[in-house]
Image (tube, rainbow over all chains, first blue to last red; front, side, top):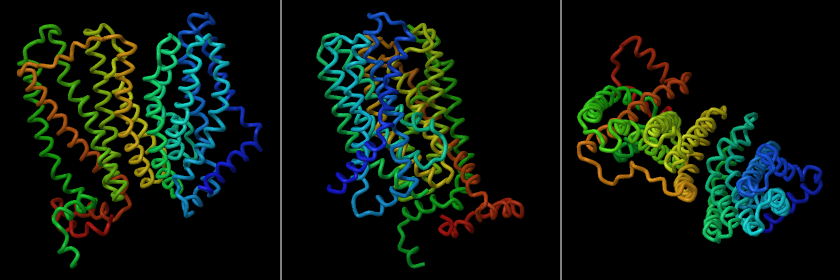
Length: 222
Length: 273
């Protein structure tokens, strides 16, 4: 347990020392959101209608684009090999890394999301649900995406492979996340969608680290 | 030698299937039989389905595309399931033949998914009036195709064949956990967005004259999968083991004596894997 906290602390400290890069993910999210009003016209009614989908797609793409860096450097300099060799569980390390990654990439996005929602004229009734759905959905996105990241980190090229592998698996989260916001914005209760999101979250938190650990072992030995 | 005597016949069979030297000629001998069985099922299935079965009272003759569409859709799921079973074998016992099986199955499964999608679109045009409807089953079939293509892309991206095989097995397993979740969320999404798209094809009962050709075609497709799978596995084995002893031995053997006794090579099976 102590070593896991230590790893998280190290990841956060490293990110803090390179804080010049930390806003990139958020900036990407903002730019994707901006693309939609520009492409579809800024009429309030139309934007309010597509806002849940737009915000969720932007969050999904932002999570996806932060994925390749998750293990790559540590795989190249041999840190992952040390994780595998250490007496602590590899799954624990994976957990700590992914949690730190969520804090660094998704949390700022969560904080800024309401402002973008207002810019897209999302009805205020949907705001709380938007935050809740992102809170439940983004860790699931990161944990599932971690599988693809671990599988492709050992490769030299092929930056497109990771999204190709992982997008199909992101569908359920997108479906229930966007639908929760949509339903809430129309004034209904989104409890059902949020429960399913929570179930998907638990499932990915528990199962994905096993697959990620297996994929890391594979990438480290190849 | 003592080990060999105590080994159960089933286990011995299992290990033999895992050895390319033994598998290659075995699959070769199986191929013509499977091809014959395929034709034996396909021809009556096609005849009964395309000529003999009565036209549907609503859809007329256009329902007959079902005899290709439905077996292809079933097979696209069956192939994935078979790959997932093989992936467990590949990851638990590190059996190379299981990896070859996944590698060879993925393009076949993708092909079936593509056939199901194309025939679905052709069927949808007269029935729904549109080539593509965001119907739950069509959408999850499309996602299944994407997952197949992703598995193939992952294999092609990794240089080392064994690592590629294991990465592919892992992704196949991740997919089999996710596929039901994806399917049911797409179904849920569909009922929410589409209202009730009453699918005419959901009729629970089907006339016996329509059912028999459908089952024949389904069986024919399954045999066809087995046939193409063995063909592709043989091809992949040759390609991967090009510089391996047994391939050279086979080439020389086929040059000197075309009908080589396979029993001689079978004893060496364990050495190569």
